[in-house]
Image 1 (cartoon, rainbow, N blue to C red):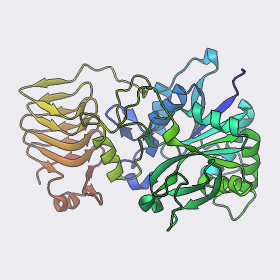
Image 2: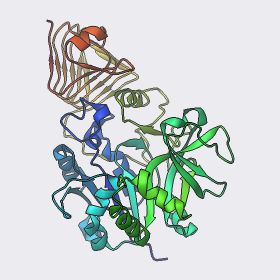
Image 3: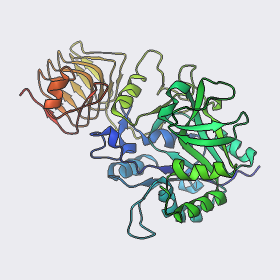
Image 4: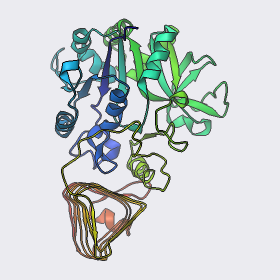
Length: 407
């Protein structure tokens, strides 16, 4: 059987305003996650592990660190025709930036013409999950339909927060609803609804036709979920891929079909807490379906002067020198000094935490210095007075390069 030609397009131009200040100096897909990864590593790992290795990453907003990460990390054999390439907004159709996710692909139509694929995979760049995309592709091909949308089951009572797929028992999509007040239940589970994961597969010719029609429509928002998918639904050419039927090697009963949208500070922090329990909600240690990234060349983590870490991830180059780390994720090259306490925290690269400092329910971005005796996350009003961001759920975020002092 001749394998079809597939082009994967990753939409990575998101500004990520709700993740500020973490996105103040970087695009959302470039935000670090899990100690050593970037958000974009999860979708790229899913595609590469699924043997889809012709990948264009469309970038736009503050893309330097994202472009650098892709260039350093995602190098594959050109002999076999494999590539992951960042594609900045090129303004091929005039002096304008992308007007939406559909417009981003329309303005990059040269990628489709040059690769000449049979099918186009269009995935988002900033969710945490594992997925065998080939299983979704096989369903798409076997159906003969033009569009397949990945859907995850969510409780119907919570479904109003999502784009919802109204599908029949045979997975044919009847309607695509944006945050409906009364979400439709599933045929086999009335108390659940299908939420769109923002991941799509298209037959190439049909996608090109839909993008051209969308570009000519002056009333359109030029959005994949808001405009393109409803076009396919209207002509009866869209189906849903049930994420619960997608199986990847090495998945545990607990983390099978895990999917997390980390679009807010609270969701981002909660997703990190999902990593650190004894049996994690999402395991980074699945060698059957690894998450790939660039690993800096640093020595292993070191614990001295009775420094401890419990229910935590501590990356290479870290030194816990007499401090205590609990329920936290530490990126490479973090120092935690004597009598310091770090609890329910996400700590990024090159952070220094001084003696007797206390960090709790907090996120410290890269190169933060917390001086001796300082507190972060203990007194939220004090955190706000210092100019730190405090989320609705009470997570304090200290921006990149900040020095926390005892005022």
